[in-house]
Image (cartoon, rainbow, N blue to C red; front, side, top):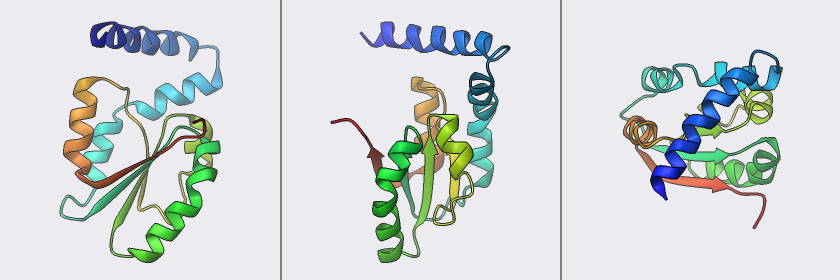
Length: 132
């Protein structure tokens, strides 16, 4: 099953690259992930305590915003890392003041996941999910 998922992710990525030639949202998705792991590695304070909040899109962000706000109020010294899957969330909230860093979520491959966790070293990960 893992092999099928990994193959699908690479096909999905290629399809989005092709679509990005004609579709603005697909283009933003592709451009936003270009060298995003290198950006994460360069921008983070690797000695800081990080808590990672992931929101697939703007809707999930709006649902999770009260949790982020309360968490930041209760833990002002912790650095908040906020990631988005979709351009709709990232583009609108890339300057969200309570997040210390806002990034696109890298393409979901085993290598990218390992590098992401290695760079962020989250003390806690919170995944905001709209549908239950």
